[in-house]
Image 1 (cartoon, helix red, strand yellow):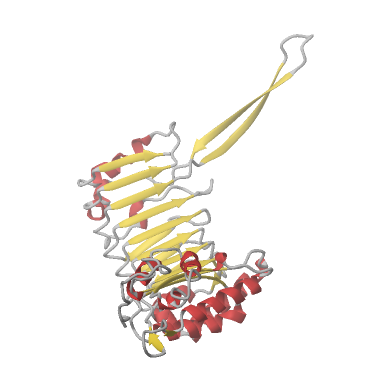
Image 2 (cartoon, one colour; image 1 turned 180 degrees about the vertical axis):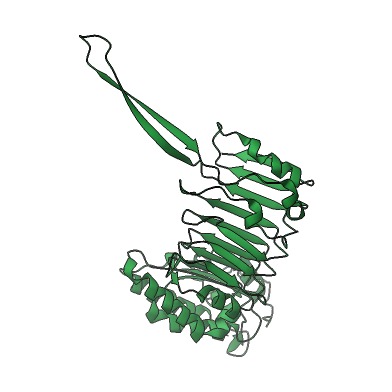
Length: 388
């Protein structure tokens, strides 16, 4: 709802900015950090109602103060409830007593605090009820000092939260979760419940049984990007994610191959990095990538400058009967490359549109002859670089 224009004749006691219409002032505030926008509202009674008219909000739990995480979340939840109220007061002289301001973009970054989840869920569902929300993001983490033995319980509480407020999660477009523990099918169920979800990040999370694979089978989802950062499981299996375009997978706990791509016909960017164990034999890219990935255009492989200590030999040398025995230590290292060369024709269908390939963290001493098969399998390759 557009507010009536204010008269632009400026008196001695009124600045020119305050003489602008509400719509213009709100447009200015929405380009500021939310804290700065709220502080600006204290300049005068003319500005006091403006933060309640913002249609784009970013609330970050780290911006709130409190002696304990509960007190911080009290302040965060209170602010969210006030700012997300759809019915807000109008400025004096505008006529009427209230206006409805639908939320177009909302980013909430908060702690997994069970006492506050219901209030957050209800508030968000009220905010998206008008159907005008274009972007909704949750970033959920644990408070500092959380008991590691309760991580699985926090994971269950999160899943209960998502099931209790299906409307809020249906509208989610981006979700970031940190330090949570999931059951075998939780991630798949979560993606299926988030109808509008485009970007999912799982950071320092794990499965209850870390010896099992994280299997994602969501043939009807619109998920376009998946980031798994230090996700602890045996491997990740993307069985069916038809709209997936970008995958980032970075950890040190996977078995070979760390990721298996199934039905991912839109996949165009893969960023893979992990630390292989000494006992792990290299794997072939054709075991990892899917023949359905014919749109793959960018591939990043990160070896984290990994070396494996092979042997330490102590040699005792006596230079003379007078000089003491000296110990000389020789330490040998083996460069750990977890990609095994293979026949280029096995990768031609997958690499036919590959234009960019970057190798990170390979020691200068490493013989890169093992990468020649990639050059032969990728006729459209334009950039092929090894970076520190």
